Length: 522
Image (cartoon, rainbow, N blue to C red; front, side):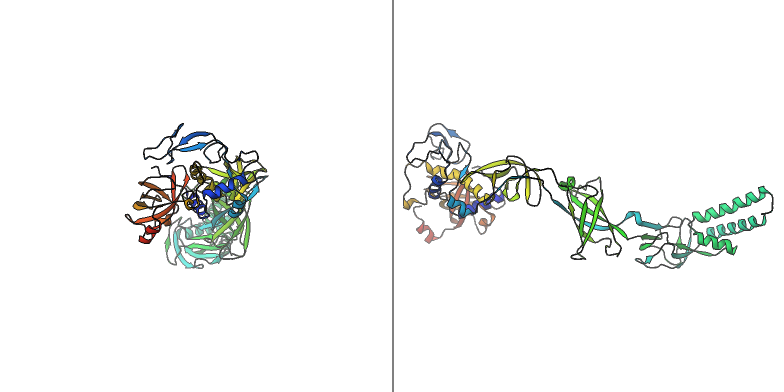
């Protein structure tokens, strides 16, 4: 047989529906109360048979009565659709059943959806506020003034003293040029201009090596050279990295210190791919950090990165935050809530009203008192509680928001109920089990496939369906039913037909001698 695997939600709903006792007698008692006005409900009125369908749900019909290869009679399908085989696709429920299921409805309404985008991020250093101390000449570190990572330094503060033959030579040239310039102040213009040019070239060389103006003035006043000079911090901030060690030799371009200004930091958040269209620079963001419970930091999106991370399917966004107290430390994790811009008004329904099978989305619409019609809908954007309906439902129509899965299960069971409606006479009290949408059987386990949620049973004749003894496959209502089942074990089981050709086992247990005697003749 064809095995149809139901989605998890449908299976749970079916099991719940079976547990509520959807019997044929119950269905027949409910139908007259729920019938639409003008329906032909007169007892004994002959109904026109449209065709006969395969009793096992196979895609085979016949205009005349016939039997299938196993000797089972084809089931008649009547005009009017009361059995769910043709005509109207709506489902009728009595007031009693509606109350028992706890059915609630809400009107589809036109509104502008607003939603918040949530993302996880991390605190990072503002790349524009990072400076690297890298001498442009080679030399030796004579003495360290800042010798630990994490130390706070200010702009112009001495970091280390350096000795460099090139630096000493540049100082000497500048001192000689300065003295010569003073000595030739009364000389002719050519000699004086030449000496001034030499002094300016020596001065430019020192400046290009990041020697501060204060140190240059000291050299000019002293009129000599110094063996070592102090190298100073170009910015105020925190020492993030220190490679300088006292006594080490360094080459031109070696990065000895990295200093970052943490008075302002970045929050880099990873926004999910489906939410990227809802964010833009300038939107406000609320940031919370686990290290400071109850404290909320506020900022704004300053940049949305142009690339997508293919592994996580997220797009980074940047939020800038002031950090005057130094609470926000690079590396801390942060949770962001971004306020997305409201969309234009559209027809919306509550999220709880949508039955999503994966391949399609269905909403149950109440078309009349006690009548419900399934609608395939096309969905758009979502908020925390509502979803936009692009097609399938109109504003003002009542949709089912509670117990819709149970109603869906009821609708699927209608096919099984219709099979009994063709019996020539009403069942007697002792035959109530055979007239129930829940059928009983006994047999032996041939195979169990827990992965696909199916079981193969060699069962005895099923009186309620007029089935002969045979081996066939069933779908398990839930995976837990397969626990403890062994091939070859004798079992008794209850099952229903959720839709044509799909037989679902709702309960199954071992069959012992006492049970066999109690169920003899079923």
